[in-house]
Image (spheres, rainbow, N blue to C red):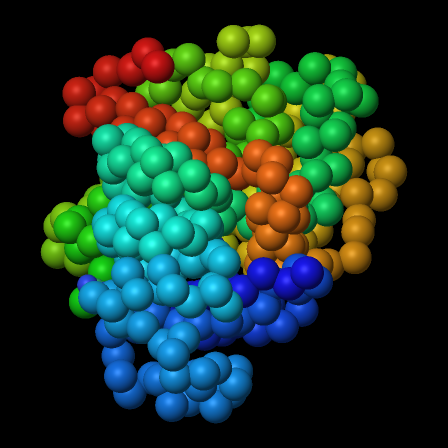
Length: 330
Ligand code: NAD
């Protein structure tokens, strides 16, 4: 069975990645849209053959309650709107798959989790790398200690964020800058490779453009300590593009992915020369099919709301460390 997915927010990611990916899924189909821009409706309806009754605005989403074509709402709006749109979807009886970061504070993430629980609907966080074969192999190598226990993880994601008038640099909509937007990939990697939660983080921020980045972080570096003794050294940047990797060093060697977090072209390498190479997959199709299978089989997803909230909790600790100039225990 194919589950109907409604895309909420028809920006760049929905248009260029998610809608095309939905066409490649086994268990999903694009069944509806939620948009504030009436000008987009005709194009989307024609391109994806959508009936008029499956087109909603943010204010009419509650009417989805009587639309059986829609099973899942995929929330793809700016970070600080995820709560509002998730609650609306859950109240309309729909499962929710939500873009990263789940929301801009732990409290708001908790409200999303509570709303989905109250409606007996599933909540997932769109961590596409969790379904990508190179990342899955990295997790296997680390967890099975194929090269011994992992001691050090270096991970970073930096992009040149571009225009100064976008929501990504407005705190009210983004909740934060480089860390929230791209650093979250490096943070996730440190957590899924170790299979552990950091117990201590220490961070600094550098701002070279205090006008553009008046409201949000520009470049953040942080270290994190894990209970096993593993350490992570991480970077997030809205200024320095081209950082996109992780390297995990264990007792008998290392493995790395670079690029690790792009939409495609993922490349892996191991110190022992063994291949770390798999066919490229569409990560958005993979994450959506997994979520659909979880819904159909009524089993939990590895990218639950709680998993999304945990990263927001750690990012809050990283921001606290920047503010206070001290290491923060978690
Ligand atoms: P975007 O700016 O291209 O699109 C955002 C959409 O939200 C637009 O259609 C916009 O009209 C709509 N919107 C509704 N209310 C708005 C408001 N008050 N202000 C501004 N826009 C409003 O952004 P995007 O790149 O598509 O990002 C959307 C979400 O997806 C974010 O949470 C982002 O972090 C996430 N994202 C994830 C990935 C990934 O690889 N998983 C990549 C890019 C973005």
